[in-house]
Length: 153
Image (cartoon, rainbow, N blue to C red):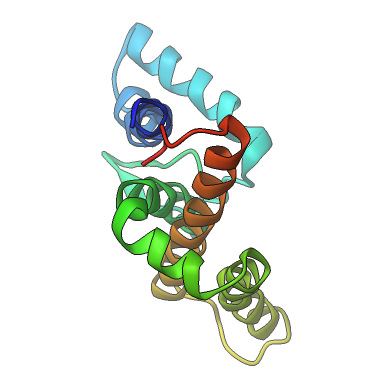
């Protein structure tokens, strides 16, 4: 349980920084500087395209809609792991879960790239959220095995 709480805290902090960035960047002085520094911090993990991002206080999130959904979905997945995650991992292999998690995003991006269907905020939230939740199920289980104890619950 302690390891899972640490994981929830770490991912929760990451998600809080995502939301804090536009709030800080919309401020004045040192707050604005801190917000800009967070954009730089997040830049290696996401393209940060304005048109593909949520906005808060007139500023974009430091990660795109799909990445935001992945991170917040991952947080939800860690929380849901003891009940839903264990049931899913008992029924499906990790490989099957990864394929299911990635399939929606791959299809969404492929249809958009091919010009068949434009990816929307709704499809990005849905596919990213599903990926994040399922990824948390697999990775929480792997962490449990790595630690070799039942402390991740």
